[in-house]
Amino acid sequence: MTDTNAVTLVARFQDSREARALGPPAEVRRAALLLVETSFGDLGAHPRLLDADQLRELVFDRVARRIGGKDTIAEFVPRVLRTFYAWLGEHEMVTHAYELEAVFDDADSEFVSRVRSVKDGERIAGDVKPIVGRGTKVGRNDPCPCASGKKFKQCCGKNG
Image 1: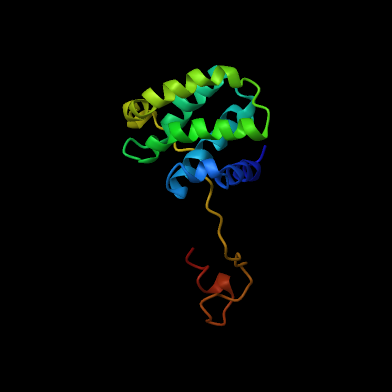
Image 2: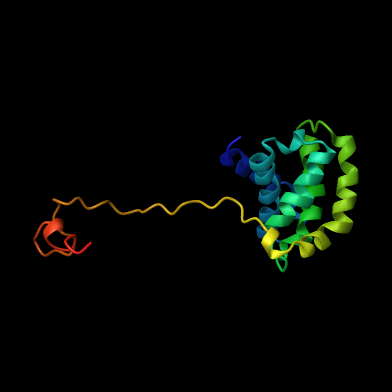
């Protein structure tokens, strides 16, 4: 599943009445995206297909390690998690829905302390996307971009 499908799933959730009742839309979106993208990216599975052990790993290990200790999103994750799965169960079949309630209860009581206990060296930053230059490359025989009228190799390219 691509990032586009994860974003679409989160957008559908965020349009729901339940998601709007959770709090600030930006925080809810960040928490939901973190959960869904981590599920697709790290575990390679749609959130509706996760069993209790996989969801526990997702929430308490992978998601907790992606959140900074002072980030306010940590308080939103347990509520977003429970609400997201309730919403998902109404619209799609959640394979192991009966097992997940224990994970939600644990997340309510332990998630924030788990995030705070992760040491800086254990944190993971998520996917780092490379910077892609937007300008065009200047060839050696092209006119120099400094507008001197010379070829690039005889002007600014001579020193580099």
